Image (cartoon, rainbow, N blue to C red):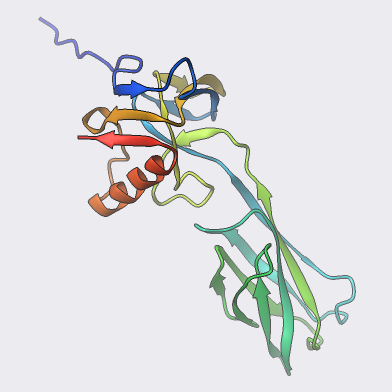
Length: 216
């Protein structure tokens, strides 16, 4: 006799929720995902990082290469401004979209800070004080994906729990997520297979900040 395994049922992980539909929102599951009821989800809040040299820069003074978004990046415009020119070198003060200083980048050395990585490359001419670059971090799609503690696009933040099974393998799927004010059975939640205890505790705290309490 063939063995049949029972799948996840809609909402079976919920211990309690707010009146009406206050705990639930319609959400869009991003194409390429296949999630199950009770799976913890993240939200794609950040897109790519696009660098640009300011128009007033010294001609042929250099560019930014390999700009990439990391965990903790903010949506908006970062700025790197030359504060210490040097022959075939130099240092740049880096500020995030809120004007907060996140570090100093050295020409030809990979910069890591404020949720970004990039390298300022030297050109045929030297930088002068005030030369600057912008690195624009685009907003993400706002769609939901399986939570990924190692993600960099926003999926590293626990933002919802899938109410039902949603197969978005071929295209986006509209579904329902528990996004606030609920108690859930921690034994019925689905997490990434490689998450460790500390990472899961941190993610549960992110859910708790939404009013979603994980009970065990």
